[in-house]
Length: 513
Ligand code: XMP
Image 1 (cartoon, rainbow, N blue to C red):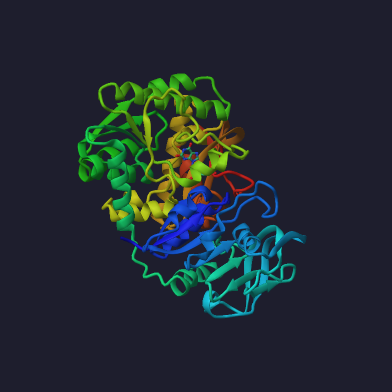
Image 2 (cartoon, helix red, strand yellow):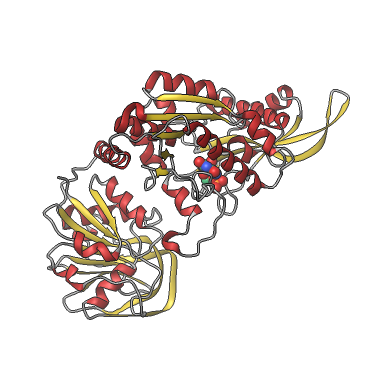
């Protein structure tokens, strides 16, 4: 049995990030709704409880709440933002709207530099995001840190081991947030840090095995990318050759992709792999379509149709496995049913029809990309597969602005090969999240030899990112840019101009469509 931290989700966007930070410290965590919290707040394995932030006001009617006895069980509790305000309200303190909102980077002065703040600088920058604040502390609590507008930036009842932070230690903007969380886990809760990527793998395998049962079969949508490959490894361990991996050549793949996937899977997996050549089918449906969302919907829909056709061969294949990650889920679906804007229909998540008649197997749904990579390494996947840059499900289709005719896709494929080769040749791909070519959809006039040309413009897109949710553009070396530019213009007939995309996310997105 592993030691466990219970995380109560009050509706924060960052709840899974808290869980991830706890995992980073090799401690197992379980995320529960407030309704299930008391029931799960028991047992010898429970070392501590973290209450997340949330959008509500602690004093408002109908605000999420917990049975107050959860604070009286002798187990350490850390409340973050709303979580802290709830603790203070529940124990007789007062919460009220602050005189001014605090949002963004804020300097706090640490008043007690031991325990929770052991090893933290006397003045440190944290990330605040709140309108309400604690106005009166409950009996026995003391102030541990303060900011200019928030005297109660961190508070604690040291004897009862109850703590509250007005700021968010889980986001990377809080410079010493990792230390604060580690202190809570290590010094306050006394964790031994007995959880590892291996344990996570074991748990995910066991969950898939339980979901699929003794004789169920899985159809796995394999894209060749890290995520679906790791799902493949998990499914294989869970149900062996009852996993039928289907790799769809949709005509929108990068150069050499299909061969790479076939070889890697032959060498490293014992799965039943089918490669479906559906390029004509996809490209026919895409003929004449330029609208980005329509293209995404068509591609997503066609994938499902291909899977359905293939799945008919397996009588008990009632399960469809996908490599959906946590950032895909929060960008496509409103967390907690609230109204969150859908930016793009990620085809893993948004394109599924209601009448699918297959249960989804999504073991990576709560994980972030770098965790998936670590998991892949643990499961024995080759480094060239684990370290691959992400490639979107709709493939080159979302990098080809305008119509995806076979000719234009081929142009893009060739340009993309050049970009990848030149980055990799110079080692400039290391630490870069994604680097690829985009066919911009605009044409321009050029002169080659003594002739006028009027051809397509191609963009180089390279970004750095931690999880794909935000990104900074990358400046490749002049030599790299020079080589890409001259090779594309000389070797890819149909492109006469190369530009560099210098847009971060936000306001841009990583893919052009
Ligand atoms: P955007 O363009 O939304 O991309 O900034 C963020 C990350 O997600 C990838 N991406 C996708 N991945 N299916 C996927 O599996 C999709 O439909 C999809 N759209 C974008 C993109 O490559 C980047 O890493």
